[in-house]
Length: 235
Image 1 (cartoon, rainbow, N blue to C red):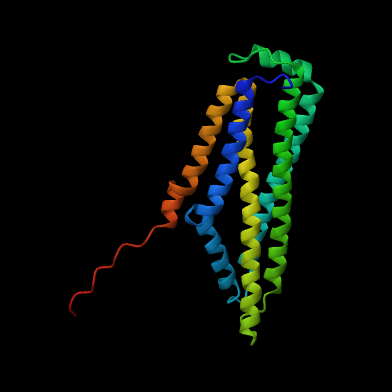
Image 2 (cartoon, one colour):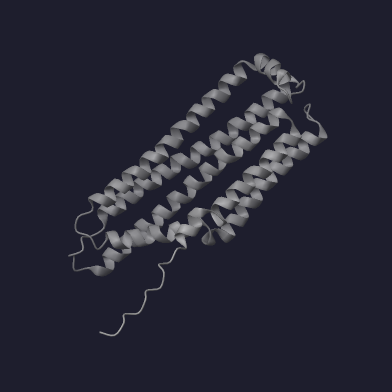
């Protein structure tokens, strides 16, 4: 079909299925991972913020989060531009792909479709990062709208701080999905070297992402507890 072999189509189905399964499984088990725990800390951060009179530190953290998201959104646009450039020099790409150590002669239409697929992945990542950046802006606005600690309406202060925290969690969720697209784009590049490399890199990326969420030193750091204190001796 369209010049793809059966093993190419199988590798593509494996890639899409792996991405979908990880997305569904992570949504179900995400609370146990690093991102889930950090979401709880985002909510706690906003509760602590609502008790502070001076919120310069909170504003600086928000600016840092927004800058990081803007960087990835810009990188996505650069990647989209690079894919568009590759489509304009498809003949040279065909020769390069054939000269690679694991490369095989690839029909022009197949190479074009592969590049379009890569472009779609980076396009998806851009939309996720752009929306995440917007949500972080909303979070900053809610942060600014949170009443001061001395305000007598404690319920309103807690309500707006909780909304800010949940908006921050939503922003982080979309940022994570954009980053996940970047990781899977690395796996997708293996398709240019062959379907078996494609499947191998997909499995490797899947394993790395799972380990970082559920079996990494970052997760161990979040589970750290101070050692029990020795009881004081007799006076």
